[in-house]
Amino acid sequence: MTQPNKDLKPEKAKIATLGFVYEPASWLSVSADYWFIYRNNEIVAPDYRRMEDIISMSRSPITDSDRANLAQLAAMCADPASGVSCPANLPGYSAGNVASVVGQYKNRGKTLIDGFDIDARSRFSLGDWGNLNIGLAATIANRNRFYMDAENGWYYGDVVGYYNNPRLRATLNADWTYKQVTT
Image (tube, rainbow, N blue to C red; front, side, top):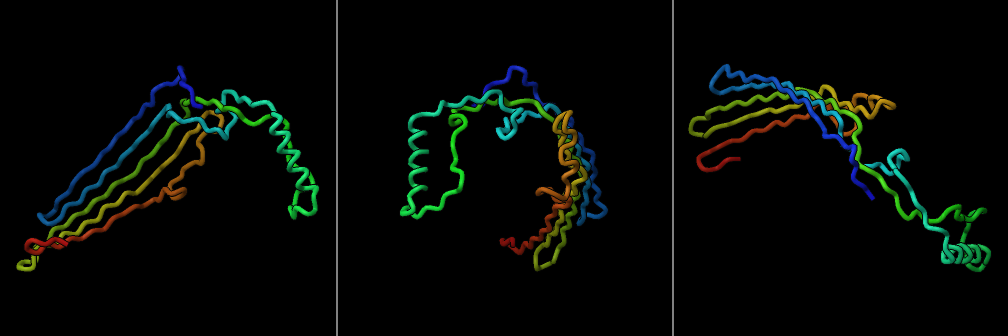
């Protein structure tokens, strides 16, 4: 279960961009932008693999049904006619089954991401053959860092180039328009 958290603070972000567009000719335009995003007090869901994210854990007591299941397993393993391979030590219960796990959304960490966007577009007239447009758009990532908390610091460091975060993403496109048809 995920409970509300009265101590939850809103996320805050600082975002900045700076860019320009250059058109040296009527058939060519080039633009470049630098972008920067810094988020603080990020709200994260509980990670039930981390004990510190779990407020309490309650267990159901071991029932007669649990004991009967263990006895049936032991009997099956003891019977050579069952054809079952069993480990030397059979599993057992030290406490009952988990009945509930409770967590809360919390503020943890910061994210710092920045990079560049570059875009170039050209337009050519092919006379009686129509028009040809060619474009290239690219994003070049500079930093992608996640600060987990004061104890863990910058978690994973800079992940640009790793973990599905490529340094360069680019798209090249071309379209040709002839009369009523564009391809």
